[in-house]
Image (cartoon, rainbow over all chains, first blue to last red; front, side, top):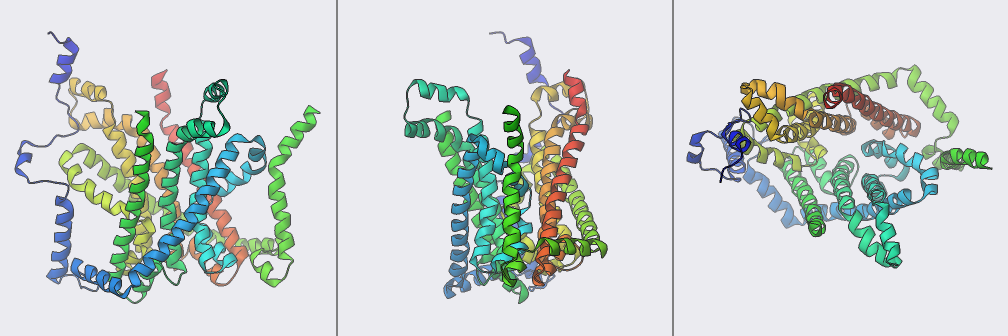
Length: 272
Length: 258
C-alpha cells in the first residue's frame, strides 16, 4: 500500500518549467482547426478591408476561383501531370540507382576503393548548384530536369542503403548460413526486413528534396509544370495563380511525405 | 607482394577520376559543340585565372557568404527564440505549431515566386528565403531538445527552488544544447543551399549563384564549373568548421561525465 517515499516526493513537486496551461483554458473553444480557420479569417478580412491592394493580396476566394478556372481549361491538370511524371521518372531512376550503388558500396571492397572517393566528392555538391551546368550540357528539355531529380534522390538513398547494409550484425548472416537459407530466402527474411526502415527514410528525404529541386528547375527553365506556372504568373503579375501554386506544391509535398511515412510505419510494425 | 598490393590499393581511388579526366579531355577535342560542354583543361585554367585576377570570384564569394551569414543569423536566431517560447508556454505551442507545420510543407524555394512579387528580387527577398530556410531546422532541434529534457533534471531544478528563468538557463538549456547545435548545423547547410538557390532565381546583384546564372546564359561552362566547385568546397568547409565549433562548445559534457 505504501508508496516509496521518493515517488511521493516526485509527485508533489510542481515543475517550474515549462509553464502549464492556465486554469481558464477550459473556457476557450479550441481544436486543431482553430488556427487555420483564424488564419483564413484574417487573410480574407485583410483583403476585404482594402488596406492591402488585391494585386498584392488577393482574397482566398479569388485564389480558389483562379484554381477552378485553370482546372476547367485543363491547364492545371496539365502542369500537375507533367511535374509529377518528371518526379516519378527521376525518382524511379535515382532510387533504384542509389539502392544498387549504396548496397554495392557496403558489400564490395573494390567498389569502395574505386568509386568511394568520387561518391563522397559528388555528394557534397549541392544539387541546386548543378542546375546551370546541367542546362548547358543537356539543354532546357526534359533530360536536365529529370537528371536534377535523379541527383537529388540518388545520394540520400545510396547513403541510407549503404548504412543499412553495413549495420546488419554479422551474426545474422552466420545464423542464416547455419540454417542453410537459400539466397532468395536471405534477401526475403534478412536483408529486406533489416534494411527497409532506414532505406524508406532515405527515400523520403530524397523525395522531399527532389520535389523542391524540380519546382526550382521548372522556375528556371521549362515550358510547363507547376514551377513554370508560378514563374509565368509572377511575370504577368497574377498573384492569385502564384498563391495557388504555392498552396499546391505544399499540398503535394505533404502528401508525398505522408505516404512514405505511412509505408515506414507499416513496415516497422512487426518490430513491436 | 603484400607491399605491392598495398600500393595498388592506395592507387585505386585515383583510377576512376583519372579515367574521367582523360575522357573529358578527349571529348573536348571532338568538335566545338563538345568543347562547349567539356571545357578543355587549358581553357579551364584560363577561366580560373580570369575569374581570380578580375576579382569577380572573390566579390561573388564574399557577397554570398555574408548574405548567407546574415540570413542564418536571422533565421536560426528567431527559430531558437520561437522554440524556447513554444516549448515553455503550452498555449503558444498549441496555437503556433499547426501554423508552422503548414508553412513548412511548401518546398522552400517554392515560396520564391510569391516572395519575389511581394518583396521584389533584391536583397530583402533573398534574405527572407535564406532566413526561412535556416529557421526550421533550428526551431525543430531546439524544440525537441527542450521537450526531451529529462524529467529528473527538471525536478531537481524545482527542488533546488530555482525560478523558471534559472531552471531554464541553468538546467534545461544546457541539457538541450546538443540538439540545438545539431539544428543549427542543419540550418547552416540549408541556408547555404538557399543562398545559392535564391541567387539563381533572383539573378540580380552579386553572388555565386548570380555569377553562375550569367555564365550559363553566356554559355561559359568554365565559369559555371568553377562556381560549382567553389560552392561545394565552401559548403563542406563551413559544415566542418561548425562541427568543430559545436564540439568545442560541448566540451564541458566530457568533463561532467568523467
